Image (tube, rainbow, N blue to C red; front, side, top):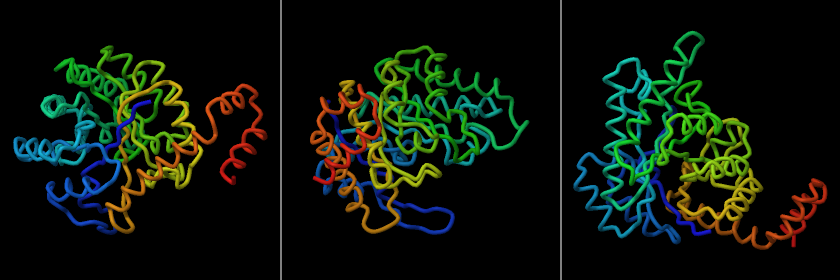
Length: 320
């Protein structure tokens, strides 16, 4: 399993919620310099359009950094024009603009040597009963994603699902709907970004969802973070759900999956570089724990299917 590790450069700049600002805004040059201090970071995930106000300059800075580009993240939620939706806006001009954003992101990804755009359509969905026409919304989504993905076959479009936020009910809320979307779009370069925290929120088992997406040939990208399954807190992986991380790594290794891990971890405490460094060290520790557990032994335990025996073994290895 060949994996590269990416840092979301947006998370090294301004971070705030409704109540507090945790980190100040920083120029991209400073954030790229911060990434280079993080041992084990192979690349970055930049966001369009926020980090591409001057596209040529941003491309130059990213190239000069020497860092790889895991994907270009296309943001279709933050600007006021998306208030009533992006791919599913009632205004056809806004829907067309969403498609244009993704096409631009694909062009930038190709220019930067990446072959992936990731997009989480969080502003698409609904908040109240009888607010939207569900079928019409869904058809608009399929049409928009298809139109964007057809722009170029050499760049893949990866849709990230999430149960809620910004909408109470996001249109692509779980793995099932994400797979259904890929099937209806019907193009080989459309797939799924699985965020482990979003899977946890949806009461999914991340390892099982990774298997489903990979089995369909649609697992393009993986975001790791953690939460308590009630809200998307974007915590350090394994801080709450250790075994979900280890099990996900086990199945990705078994599947022979290769690609980028990116880390959607929100730093509300301490130094952002130290936090991201801890994230990568935790992931390496999880990989070492998996090696210590042994793939053959885990396969044998799965074959037997006795939870008491399995949990006793897992804890005995941790305690040894």
